[in-house]
Length: 436
Image (cartoon, rainbow, N blue to C red; front, side, top):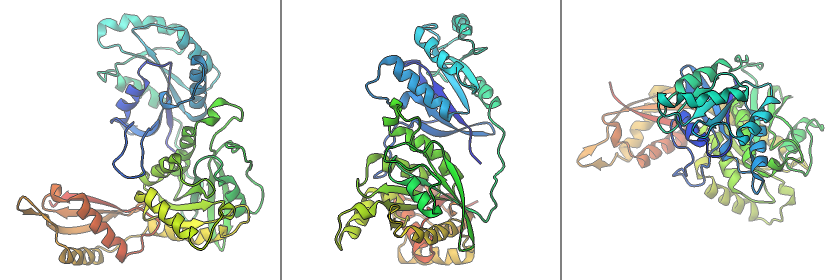
C-alpha cells in the first residue's frame, strides 16, 4: 500500500522547512554518521494519529539560477505532480503578498486538495492578521506557529481528511514485486525492456523520458513478478528536469511497494552522490537490495576491472554490505536474466524466519568466543534472542542493561547471524531490550 504524499508549497521565508521538521519530528537536513549516506532531505516519512504519510519540503528543491517567481512556479508544479494533498504556507506577519497570489494562481490549476496555513501566528492576539488570507480562495486559513509548534494538530487533522482511501494490493502474495531505482539515464527503462523482450517502456538518451512509475507483470520459470520502473523526472523541457533531487521523489513511492529494490548504477559514469542518496532510502525502508551495474558493455576493462569496481562500490556503499552486486548490459542483454535468481534469493531471505532455539545457540556460541566488553565494571549479559518480524528480519535481544550494548558489539552479533544463516540481499535489524 502506498502512503499518501503531502507537499508544503509557498514563497521563500514563510517557514516551510521549519514546519517540515516539526511534522517529521526531527531536523532531517543533516549528514548521517554512516559513510556514504548524506542527508539533504526534501522527502521524509511522518505520521499523525493513525495516519502514515510522506511529506515533501519544496523549499529544499533547488532549481538553480532561475528567476524568483519561476523558482516558485517550478516547485509548485513538482508538488502538484507528486502530492495527494498540498499545504499552501504563508506568513501571517507580512500579510498576502504578490508572491502568495502567484502561488495560489498556480494551485488553482490542480484538482488536488489545498489546505491554507498561516505561519508565525505566535499568540491569539495575532489572529486578526489572518482575515486577509481568505482572499486567496482556499477557504478557512489555519493559524500555526512553526517556532512554537502551535496549531499543527488542527492543520494535520484537516490534511488527513483529504487522504485518499487505501488501495487494496492488486497482486497476490506469491508475486515478487521489484523496482529499479537510480539517477535518470542509468538505464532503468532499458533494463525493464530487456526483461520483457519488447519496447514496453520509452527509452531515450535524454534523462527523464519515463513519465510515471510503470508496473509490468512478468513471468519467468513459473514465478510471477511485477517490475516497477521509476521515472527519473517528468515534463521534457521543464527547468526542473535538471535537478537530480527530483528523482528521489519518484523512487520513494516505488520503494514502498517493492519486495526487492534494484539500485541501478551507470557503469560508464561511476558512482555519484545522488546514487548514494537514492540507495540510502531503500536501505532505510528495510527492503531487500541488489546493486546493479548497468552499461557494463561500454566500460573499457581488463581482468581486474570488475574486482576493482566491486571494491569501490563496497567502499562507497558500506551500509549495503549485504547487497549482492551484478554487472549487466541492458543494451546487449548480457547477464540480465542472471538477475532473476538473485531477486528470488533476496526475496526469500527477506522473509526468512529462524527458530529461536537455533538462533540462541548461535548467539551463545558467539558470546562464548567473544564476551561483551565491560563498562566501568559492568558487563553486558545476553539472556535470550528471538525473531519478531520479517521484511526485514528483525530480532529482539534481551539483556541486563540495554545501554551496555555498544554499536560495535551489536555489529559483531549481526555478523555472526549473517555468517550462520543466508541473509544475502536483506538488511537485518537488532533491537536491544531489558529482560522483563
